Length: 358
Length: 121
Image (tube, rainbow over all chains, first blue to last red; front, side, top):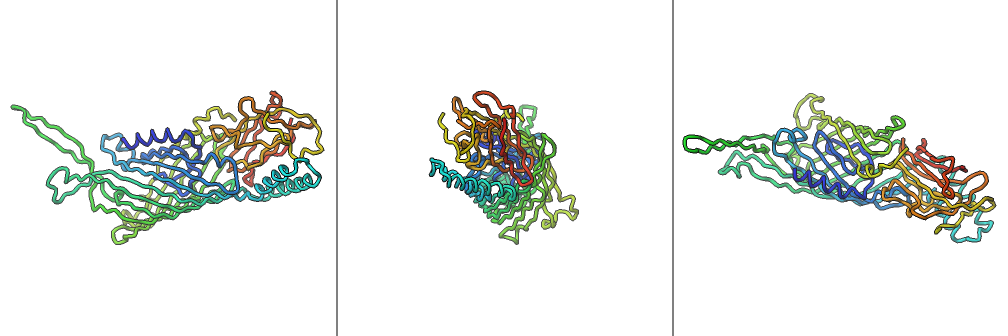
C-alpha cells in the first residue's frame, strides 16, 4: 500500500507540468505507443496506477524533427482490487522508466515552405517585387500540399527502466523457522525497449516495440492466504491470537525474455461531446530465453476508451486473451483464458484546464 | 507592442492598423505548424504565447499584435493537424472589441488537417 501511496503522491507532483492525452492500453496498463499517454491512470481490475512526466507540451507546435523524452512510474497490486477489500496483504509490483526518442513530421513540405517564407521576409524587409512573387508562389504550393496530403508522423524511441516485486515465498522443505518457511523475496529486474509509432491522421496510430527484460514467473505461482495461530496460557485461561500471512507457492525463478508489442489505435467521434480511442487489436509476444522452464506466450486483446472532447476523463473496457494458443495448458476452453476489465483515467493536465469551454 | 512586422502578402492591401489580442485553445491531439499562424498578415509567435496548460495559447497582460485590418475583414490563417474529433477554438479582440465571428471553431477534416484561411469580421 505504501508503494501505491508513494506513486499517487509522485504522480500528483510530476503531472503538474505534463500534458493530457488518452490511450487504450492493455490489462497491465502497457502500450508500445508512447506519445499519447495519459498522466495518471487507474485500472480498476488490476489495481494499477501509473504516472508520467514528459516534454509533450512542445509537441503542440509541429516541427520537422523533435526530441521527445519522458519519465514514467507505475505500480499495481498483483492480486487486483479484491485484495484491497478482503484484508489480505498486498503484493506490490512497481516499475520506473525513462524514454527518449525522435518525432519526425511528414508535414515537412508545408513546414519547409512556411520556413522559407519567413526567411525570405526577413532577408527582404523592403518587400521587393521578386520576394512578393516568390512568397505568393510558396503560399500556392502550401495550399496544394494541404489539400492532398494527410497529417503523418513517425516516432522512434528507446525506453528503459527497472521493475520490482516484493512478496513472500512459501518453502515447505527445510524450513526450520517461520521466517524461513515464508521467505521474503525482493525481485529487481530491468527492461529496454526499442519502438516505432506511426501516426496517420485522422484515424490511426500504429505502434510496435521490441524489448529485452529481466522478469520472474510470479504470475504462474499460486497465491495462498495462511492463518497463523498463537496460544498463550494465562492462569486458567488461554489467549489465542491469529494473523494472516499471504505467500506464493511453487518453483520460483527469475529469467530473461524478449517482448514484442504491437498496438493499432483508431480515433473516432461518437457525438458532439464524446470521442473514442479504440485499440482495435493489440498483441504481446513473450519469448523467454530459458524455454525449458518457461513457455512462450502470445497475448492479444482489444480495448476501447470513451472521453469528453476536452479530454477531462476517460473510461473504457478491455478484453484480453492471456494465452491465445494455450501455451501454458491452463485450460482448453478459449473463453476461459479471456480476461476483461474496466479502466478509468484521470488526466491532471486536463483537470487544471477547467476553464476550457466549447 | 513588441511585434509589428507585416507579411509580404500584405503588400497592395489597404486598411488600418489595429491592436489584436487572442485566445487559442485546442483539444489534446492537435498540433499547430511552426510559423503557420498569422492574424492580419502578422505572424503569431505560438512558442512565446503558450500557456502553462500546453493546450492553450494567448496574449498575456498588455501584449498586443499590430495587424492590418482590411475593409473586408481581418485575414486569419492557421495550419494544424489532429485526430478525428479534435478541434481548436479562437477568440480575437480588435482594439479590445470581440469580433462578430467569435468563437471560431474548426474540427479535423478527412486529411487530418484543421486549417483555416479566411477574412473575418
